[in-house]
Length: 183
Image 1: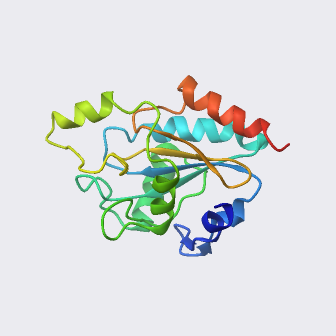
Image 2 (image 1 turned 30 degrees about the horizontal axis):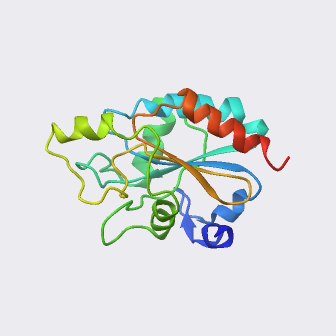
Image 3 (image 1 turned 90 degrees about the vertical axis):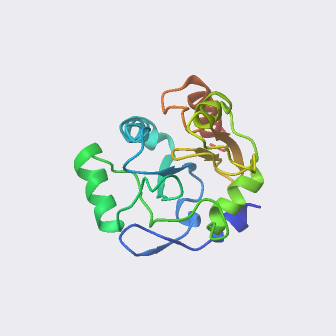
């Protein structure tokens, strides 16, 4: 599994080629992000988490996606500018991807297959139903800011619902556990 995840071709937001292998032996928090979402202020918490745990081996990886109500309409340059100027984001950002549907990026196909259920799922899903959003497939990424945790060996060890914030004890405990392994 690890080599499969590590080998999936990716593009950084500046257009350079990348792979998760570039972050081998680090703990990865992969997040699909958006600039015009009610959850967009999570950028602040994600950046704080990145700064607090980067030296221990954590990388937060942002993947802009426009799958939900057009909440990431910008191009890479606009997204990069927004993240830098509004939230002073320093964690690695990648080119826009699709996280579900027929054009789903291979990374997200692998992530959702490895972790079909999200911790904390339920309350946010119910709230979305109130807006007429009811995903057909329970394993699909539910919304922007869903989080996948990958350990130092490249295993997807946890998945967190979109409204699980960066300072949520469940997320922090899982990150700390992953950081403690393999050192």
